[in-house]
Image (cartoon, rainbow, N blue to C red):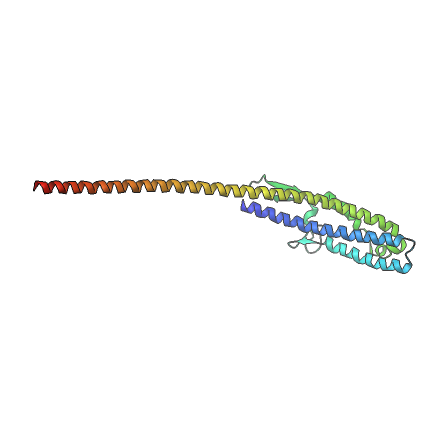
Amino acid sequence: MAVAIRNTQNDISLMQTASSAVDNIISIFGRMHDLAIQAADASATQADKQALQTEFVELFQEVWNEVGTRYNGEDLFISQPPNNHAKLFFPVQMQIGESSDNVMTVNLQPQLLGTFDSLKYDNTALETILTQNANAAIDDTVNAINSWAALGSAMGAVSNRLEHVYQNLANISANAKAATGRIMDTDYAAESAATTSAQMLEQASTSMLKQSNSTSQLAMTLIT
């Protein structure tokens, strides 16, 4: 049971790491959305748009840093050298109990595929999107936020289930330990009672033997 509990705790940590990265990505795209709205307004000068464009590019690069998040040295969302394997891009099995049947299969691939369009900018498009087509950037960032939010919601459901699994395993373990303790206490009490009874019988026998010896000695004294 202890191993199953530890597995569940590790799985929770895995999902928390992934969820934190997704939350950061959503926040970044939120800021990029604000920049796009600002750049699309008629009051924005070309210099304003260029300044907004510079921040937009830097934020998009940070999105890629978050997309490259790893857990225990393994990529989570996209495969990159040297691993060339993204753990959460494919279905994973979480061993959440002591039986081979106690497996939780997590498949986030549909939601992950939905986020790929948010990463579509090549260098040329990225460098000019706010100065030349800020309205398109508005739509792009809205779609990006929605797609990553869908992934975050799916991961949140997995995390919630894992939390319930952990609580259940912890309760089972605690109750099992308590039951074992009660059995041991009962066995000890029974053994103690048996020992006390044996000691009392032994003491009574010794006392009766002493009395018998004393009576015999008294009788011999009277005879002589």
